[in-house]
Length: 120
Image (cartoon, rainbow, N blue to C red):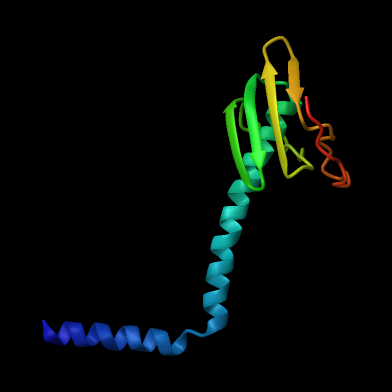
């Protein structure tokens, strides 16, 4: 038992000695990119749902988003390219293609992000 604990300690010590700060920072950057990817996918789902006027309530505020209703983008035959160019907003899409939203911009991914938000 003592032998296995000492071998484990030697292994851990060796790993710590051979691991440099660049490798650690790469691991943390990867974790940060994963969170960013999830945020982008959530915003892409909101853009897709609003663009197709799918009924639902959509709220986004500085990386935090809520989507009640709508749908995730259908990426077949191609990936939906739409993007919301606003950090904050709210939208309510009702059946019958009625939309009430603070977002007045385009869903074009190439658009400049100089659109402001307006109230209802």
